[in-house]
Length: 157
Image (cartoon, rainbow, N blue to C red; front, side):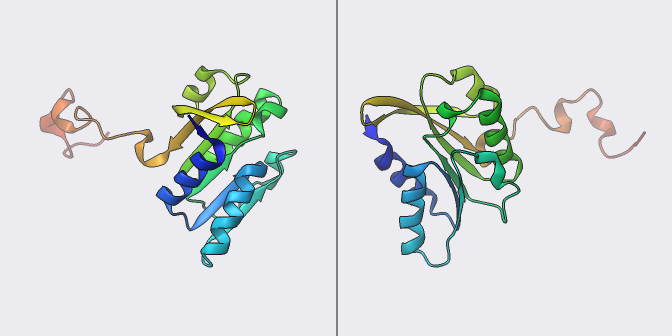
């Protein structure tokens, strides 16, 4: 198990974002450090007390980091935050959440469980959403597997 700072720092390094969104103190500190090292990086900071007030974002972000936020708000507020991050085109979202948010809620929003991280005296679960892997191309989703493949691109109704 790693710490939340180590996990987020590794994710930032792997993603190498040109634009970052942060929500929560730990996420904001790491995003600020990344921005100081990369002058061309944009950092959009969301207030963890009122996370949905920062929308719409000024631009599309490559990565959003969320921590120390969801556990302090009703579930509808958290769902709205994660939904807006997805809908405004954030390519990758990583969330550290406690046990008060059920696994099925993250799965319903298209997230995958990545593992456990340590945040001092508590364990958090790390969830991620990646737009590039959310809806992969399926072998069966082509005209060869449709009812009338010979009619592909011949008739429109």
